Length: 498
Image (cartoon, rainbow, N blue to C red):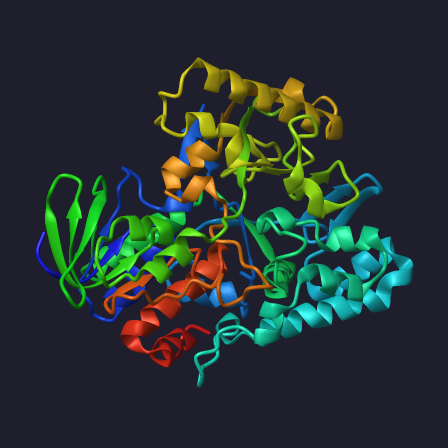
């Protein structure tokens, strides 16, 4: 390997989007990935002929004129990433003890559909829609607007809490829980989660919602191919052991095999804490290091990957969120006896447009403490106790699914499972955290991770910058690349695809 303009550590979505933008603008880019497969949370795997996603399950705002459609067009993904539209009458189904509630697609459908389910709440539902749309409109990169100040999110929505917002919308706690029903998409915490997290995510999906067909790796593979067309280089099985600095800046990375790679600038797609672990330099001051090390991370998950018997289980074109509690906020505070207090059940979109499902994901919150005793083990070598733990949890989760869908277990051919350790080892996120650093409305600046580090030519990208998810990470990558190109240079380039 020669010397590069930019070395990017990690090939998750953030690293790939940065690689795409910078290589498109003529930078000589090198992306280093420690695993054999690129993509981070976009990685997939196959069991019994069924492809399973590991982190990117469904996407929103992909209709023409909507924000992700524009970003996909810019990134060359529209024609290379097959998708299947979810049910317009209910792309999400929120199942509470009080009944099942459908979340319709499209703002007018959303108001009409929920008003039919909550006849006395129409005005409040309209107010809810108006407010989350305002939050999105106040966020320039979510609307692909040029920026004249370095403010990417409205300060009010960063300091305001989701829970207070919901209580102000309606005193009806069932309606509140329905509106909060997709809370596993951001692992919300009652006393911490800022309004913008909820508002941007719900606004994103209400506009339109799609499943990826054939696996989320179509995104990473397409981006990688485009980067290589632009002259960029991508290397797998290339784990960065150290980031070396001189007295002023970063100068090179050292791989685990001892190879040294030089560059003018560096971007880390790793978790901020993992990035600091690669650095031993006085340029990183103790106060900055301690702030990063003390950041709280979101909860992890336990997932069962289900293979169905052929032509047995009808394809379910909605995402099913089940709660065994009348308070969706409390699901992260489960006990071993109460687990699972909730789960998310979704089918993999079949490539042949079949009426029957081939596979499904069954996801529940899981604390890292439950698997901490095996944290020093590696994939495939965790022992019999770990296998027994996974088996026990899988059975509990499948039994919970059976209660919601009687007879479903008779349609299952086989299943496998993953824990927070699996997620940690394949994505390198701290303790298998689903969404990285917790954003806290009480400490908005302290829990905001900047794309800039204390090293002038080392930057960060990924779900800890701006926000998580396909849109949040894409926008975070644009913010990172703005350090090289200027934000409005990128925005003007993107606007050509509107």
